Amino acid sequence: MSNYLEILMIIVALLLVIVIWSLSSVLAMMAKKVVEQAKNAKKILMIIVIASSSLFANNIEAQDAVADSTSAAPIINYGGMSSTGFWTMGTVIALELLVVLLLVLFIKGLWKSLHPVAQVEAEKKMSSSWLMTTWKKLDKQFFTKAAPIEQEADIMLDHDYDGIKELDNALPPWWKYGFYITIVVAVFYLLKFEVWKTGQDQLQEYTTEMTEAKAQTDAYLAAMKENVDEKTVVMADAAGITAGKELFAKTCVACHMSNGEGGVGPNLTDDYWIHGGSINDVFKTIKYGYPDKGMQSWSSTYSPVQIQQIASYIKSLRGTNPPNAKAPQGDLYSELAIVDSTQVAKMDSVSTK
Image 1: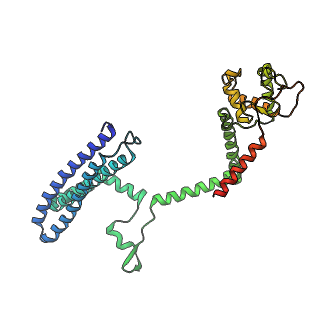
Image 2: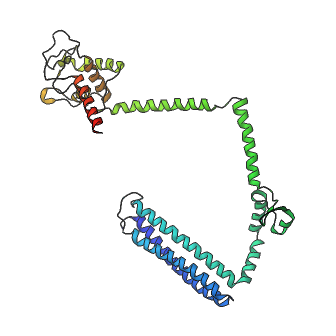
Image 3: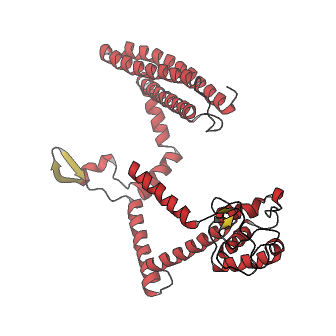
């Protein structure tokens, strides 16, 4: 109950309950007067009882829904309210507004029956007002253009469909104007695309959109390259390996020598690796380093893409057999063994399925 939106919705729902109760009381009092004045009292009473009972039933359901919604577990979703609580309260308020509308309509109908003379005078006064006159003119010019009820006999057609007859009213002006606009648009479309050739046809639009989409995709992929890490890294292309060679010459030759034959650091051209020989392992070694063994971290010096390029260049040195190569260090690493183990894992998963 610390959420302001929830408190506001509950207050609105409770206020609407009070409004419904007040309108129901007014409706009940007016219904009694109508029953007293009506000749066929039993029939009217039955209608009012049925209508009132249905409205009160909706009122009770609304109150129950309010009580249930207040006990819902708060899951932050809609302004701090749970999804279920928010839509439950929204439904309750909507139902209460509907009940209020129906009650007002019922009260209005009963008021007409209790004060027929005053209602007729009010309708006459309203029909003679400037607003009503203006509306009738606008309705005739732009919306319906239908003949008055008094003149319907003059435009009645001879068609008779099981007692249903047809009036020969004019088409609604708004529909005709819309049809005329479509004709103008069609002519303009024909001139623009087929005569003046100033617009792109469907194939040209498709080509343009695909070009724009490719540019956006390339920009996205270029930005995503910076997000490479030891789990997602792959071998760089030829240009990346060349860039990695230049970075290697600036930084790594002090320990691994110019051809990767090894000096203070291990030989990078054989199949023996101290910390793993996959592209992922090499990337991880360069990124985080092993300070206890003299290998510093280069993550603050180079970007992830640059580390990928260096790792790819190092992987490309395998089997180059440079002179004065340092003796192997670490464990034997085989790319073929990794591939074979992957295939075995796939076969096991297939056989299990």
